[in-house]
Length: 370
Image (cartoon, rainbow, N blue to C red):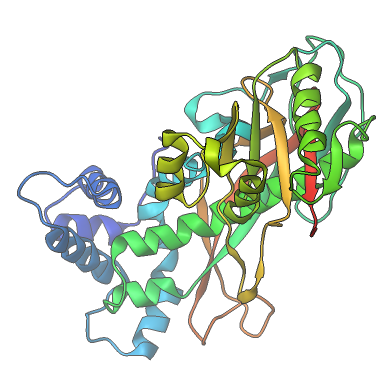
């Protein structure tokens, strides 16, 4: 990890508390992972970190809102210097916690020693690289011959954190919730970028009729659906296939299964997950659904779309993560995306690149009503 040159104020706080940054950082890690050393309670760890935070800001637990706002303005940068390395770890870990991410994304973290270098190992890439910029959606279409190496351009992305720091300092939220808010702000943004690219991918398939279909999932369309699965497998050297969708979408597959033939393991999956764990020989991968930002009437992902991918090494999304998180304050009062409830707002910034490499065929089924 990079070395941080802390201000004399922060160093004085470490001295006053008779601790070092490494000790504080380890405590932050352990608390977030819920793996505290024996003899250290969660409450003790929370109190230690909150005490450290208050001292950096020059506050007490009884400080007024105006005093807190002034402290965030004067010392916010110094405070986030202390926690940025912890967020580096939580962001890179959080990205890989979802099964769908691991199935789809070839992830490289440059801070962990990976190179921004990818190799096309297929005989023919169907449609090259589509690059996503920060302020636009540039598409660079090119053919990549077999064994061609390429790198991905990166952009700096920002995700808002809001006033969670204030809730933390006045004791309304604990350390893990604060870091979780910072982590999720960026993880969710990154996942949205990946899915925005994924939604465009079927339009780039040179042959769609055998791989992109629409219809109700019922006994009438069962053969048609199974044919799409078979086509994806055949187009990828008869590899195994996974079906990906939200829980609601995957539940529709139950319409294709005769309940009299359901296995004991499928009954267990249904009891534990609310859905089947597999459809015949095919593994099901769930995309966790969530509401759109600030709108509980709208879902982010379409429940009516199922994706069919070849399993194994045929990941179609390449992602480069430069791996160093920066947390900056946004101080322009009155500007769009500036302050929340007159408190300082912070933004998680991280440099990434995302590209789609259609080296193999995949399928999509749009679920409709009967």
